[in-house]
Amino acid sequence: MNSSPRNKLFLMMVLQFFIWGAWLPLIFGYLPTLGFNSDWEQPLILNAFPIAAVVGMFFSNQFADRSFSAERFLAFSHLVGGLAIFSLTFVRSFWPFFFLMLVHCLLYVPTISIANSIAFANLKDAQQEFGRVRMGGTIGWILAAWPFTFIFVDWHKVAGTPTHGIVDWFGTVFGSPLTGAALEAGTRWTFAVSGVASLALAAFSLTLPHTPPKPKAADSEDRFAWLESVRLLKHPFVLVLWIVTLVDAFVHNCFFNWSATFLKSSQVGIPGNWIMPVLSLGQVAEILTMFVLGATLKRLGWRITMIFGILGHAVRFAVFAFLPEYQWLVVLVNLVHGICYAFFLCHRLYLRGRLFSEGRAIQRAGAF
Image 1 (cartoon, rainbow, N blue to C red):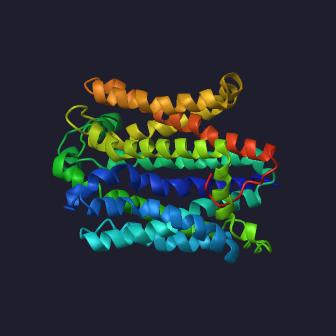
Image 2: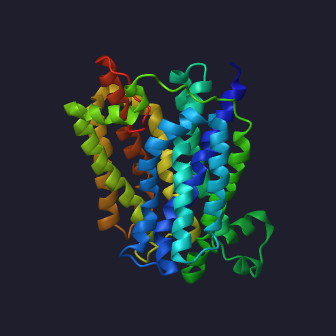
Image 3: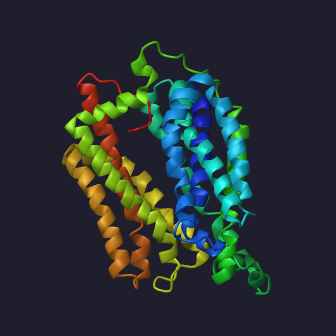
C-alpha cells in the first residue's frame, strides 16, 4: 500500500479531534455567561456528550458500523453535527442550545469509533501503523488551540497602536487579549471554529477509501458485542481496571471543568488569548511521552506506569491549589496532563494483552 491512504487517514484524525478540542476546554466557563443556572441547565448541557457516549456505544458498533459505508456515515454525521455546533455561535437560549449540543454530540461521538474502523480497515499493517495515524488526533487537538491567540484579541486596540514591522505587530497582537465581558462574548467563536472543521471533515470524508458496512454476525455474541464487554467485568483484573478508570475519568473531567476559568483568574492571570495554547501543552507532552512509553513499561511495568499516570493528576492539582502565584509553574505543570494521559492509557494495552493471553477476543463495543 502506498502512503496516500495513510496520509488521508492521518488528516482524518487531525480534523476529527480538532472538532472536539476547539469547543470543549472553554465551554465550562462560557455557559454561566449565557445565564444558564448551575442547578440543572449547565449540567444538562455538559452531560450531552457523556449521554451520547453511552448511546454511541450501541449505535456506532451495533447499527451504523454494520448498516452504512463508514466514510459516508462519517460525512453525514459531520455535516449535520457541524451545522449544529456552528449554530451554537449565535444561540443564547437554553433549550435551543441544549438541543443543538445534543444533536452534535449524538452524531459526533459515534464518529470516533467509525474513524478508528476506517483506519483499521485501510491500513496494511494496522498494528504497526495505527499509532502514527492516531497521533494525528492529538496534533489536531493542539492545532485547535492556536487560532484563538488571534480570535481572542482586542483588534480595536491593535488598530490604534502604532507598530514598526511585522515582529512589532505580532507583539502588539499577542499582547492585546480580550478581557472581561468581551472575552466571555468572544468564547462563542469556539463553536464556529469547531463547526467549520466539522464541515471540512464532512467533505473530506467522501475522499476516504471506501469502507463497506461489516456483515452482521450470525451468532448472538457478536451481534451484542457490548454485552460481551460487560461480561468481561467478571474477571477481577478487568473490574479493578474499570473502577480505577472510572475514578481517573472523573478527575480528568474535573481538569477540563475548572482549568480555563482558573488560568484566566486574577490568581494566575493568563491572558485570554493564551488560555487554549497553555491547555494544549498537555497534548504536546502526550506526543513526547508516547516515544518513551515503551521503554518506561519495560523498566517499570504496567502497574507502576499507570500509578505514575494517576499520581500526576495529584501533582498538577497541588500546584493549582497551593502555588497559583507562580504563573510559570502553573503553565509548566500542564505538561503533566499529557504524561498522565499517556501513562494511564497503557491500561488499554495491558487489558488487551491479558485478554489475548487468555484466548479472549477484544470486542469492538468501544468499552475499552
